Image (cartoon, rainbow, N blue to C red; front, side, top):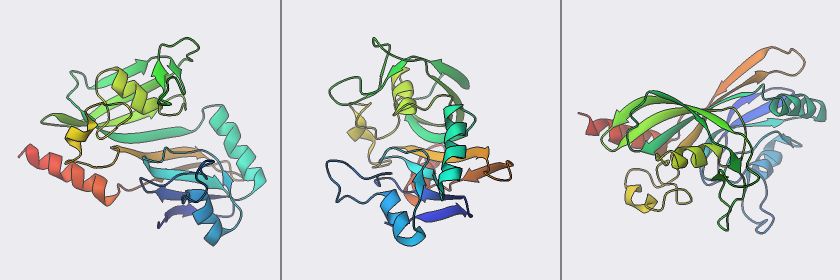
Length: 223
């Protein structure tokens, strides 16, 4: 798989990960391609800073040295990193903005889904803004304030607006795959302080072609 490089300097490298590509090597299937190994082939040693689900596309950040890795990790741990996701969801909310505060438990069932309000759940917040509405669907922006696995997917499903083509969190996902055959979630933007200069950096990942095509098809439903 090809990785589009969004930013590269002596401390960091950011790529636009395609949907279907793992971030790191799978322990059970080490032969599967992953972003880390693909980058190491062309860039040499890199350090993982955060991860995206295999099915999610978008901006993925790595460190080029141990010092930058530590600096970026501290920002993630203190929740100073701002992440913006864009998602196609099923349904049309009767609100323009919503703050979802539902506690989450990662790996909360036999399907390894993140579930809400289970014993041992931890506080989690996702802010959602409606960007566009189409017949039967909506395009939203999601701002997660915590960084749990599947957080956005679990939160949107829990309030009745699952992400398009999400087989884990929508039992009827196959009905919508004519619009988009992959998960309708894209890591659109990440903002953080750069190592060394300690100045803010904002990196944006363009939509993949199949994601943009789905948006175009839905937009045509409004005409």
